[in-house]
Amino acid sequence: MKISVDTMDAAHKACAEGDKKETEAFMDQFMKKQPDLCVFLDTLSQEFKDEDAAELVFFMALVLARSFDMAGIKIGLIKADDVENAWNRNEQLAKTVAGDERAISDMASEEDHLTNYPEPVLLSVILSGIMEPDGAEKNVFEKEDDQSLAFLILKTFLDVLIGASESAGSEQ
Image 1 (cartoon, rainbow, N blue to C red):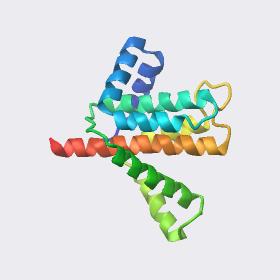
Image 2: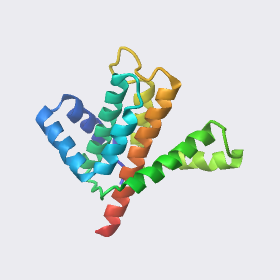
Image 3: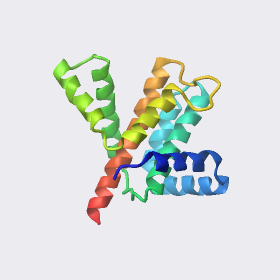
Image 4: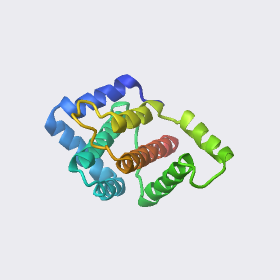
């Protein structure tokens, strides 16, 4: 099930403009259900020197999680190994795109992966949010390294949500 632009917009609005207590309750519940994923997010977000960058990554992750919730997609338990495996795949993808390691034919398979990504709306939101954050006076990810780190964190976050939603769906 793909998440629509309308659902993602509603999740964004709920997180940005909605009832703060409701958003905090959702966040607390998510943290209890997905502690390993939240530890990953917290740990890697500390790599940003700019606190605004870390806050924006947290906010974008919250919007991603809320999008799944508002779409009625169940998320199974995400374990640390799942997060680590997704992180390693995404690091490899980043190296491939940068041309660091593999042949062009391998790069084509990675491009196909992105073209056929299960949640293209959410992936495009990540990319646009990193490149041109809404309403921001300045881009908090001015440095390319910060943009890359934000993308790796958020794509990993999204990948494990997708993986856990697929496994949760197959258990029903």
